[in-house]
Amino acid sequence: MLVTGNDILIPARAGKYAVGSFNTNNMEITQAIIHTAERLRSPVMVQMSEGAIKYGGQDLADIVIDLAQRASVPVALHLDHGSSYESALRAIKMGFTSVMIDASHHPFEENVHETRRVVEAAHAMGISVEAELGRLGGIEEHVVVDEKDAFLTDPEEAVQFVEQTGTDYLAIAIGTSHGAYKGKGRPFIDHARIKRISELLPIPLVAHGSSGVPAEIVQRFRDAGGEIGDAAGIADEDLQQAAQFGIAKVNVDTDLRLAMTTAVREVLQKTPKEFDPRKIFGPARDLMSQVIEHKLRVLGSVGKA
Ligand code: G3H
Ligand code: 13P
Ligand code: NA
Ligand code: ZN
View: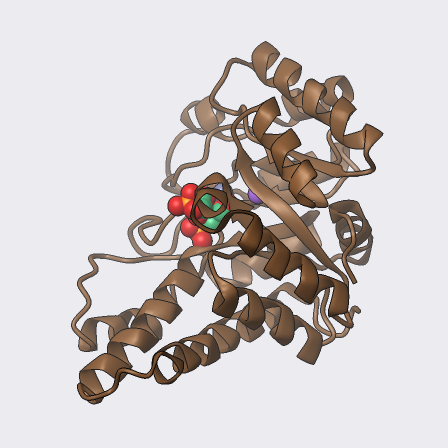
């Protein structure tokens, strides 16, 4: 069933597990996300960025909405990194049941102002809202507290932000970062900060940039002719611990991109005569399903729907 973000995330926060929010850009990705969640009896969120909306438009949103409505588990369609009030409203008109307004690069007061406008409009239509405070970026464990404080989310500021905006869930900067290069070796995740924020705030917390960038898939990508540098992702143990401390929504895009492209490369490399798209994108969908299954198990959402 198609539900709001709150319907999925409030029970997750209360139950000390996290829900995967996976980016989609086409039918096969959407099927992998929703069908894997159904198979594992897990709630799930499907998110489209503004780039995904530009690429797939209402056609893609309708695929997600139709699969979600027919799904045997709760599914939300979420706008990822909405950049403006207009963008958030457009998504709601398209049928999204959850929207992110990301004004985190603006000064605090402007972030509050933009977020509050979106919250007022979205709540009037029964749609829940994600906002972000802090700046995402990899940090080293030995970095001094002052430097961490410069861009990781400040707990007291987070409380003020939520009070002043009424956002339903909050994305926080805790050491994760977008893409396939999250740092040298195992990226440092500031668990003390997550714990402090969750003690002060009862709402679901969100971790962006949470792909695991599995070494095995990176190697397969290379073996199939792909070029990738010192790739590194967030460790499973870090996500498990974060879910215990209030992270209820975990964003994953890079892992699915990598899985899809790796499988496509492998088929094309092994069977140069193949040109049936189903023989190319079928294995890609299967490999994405494996990656999604692993993530849902790590996050603890399996069996919760
Ligand atoms: O955080 C960004 C997501 O990975 C979406 O990326 O804007 O290229 O679709 P995109
Ligand atoms: P990754 O790049 O780690 O997959 O993060 C995706 C994300 O945060 C989308 O909002
Ligand atoms: Na998001
Ligand atoms: Zn993100």
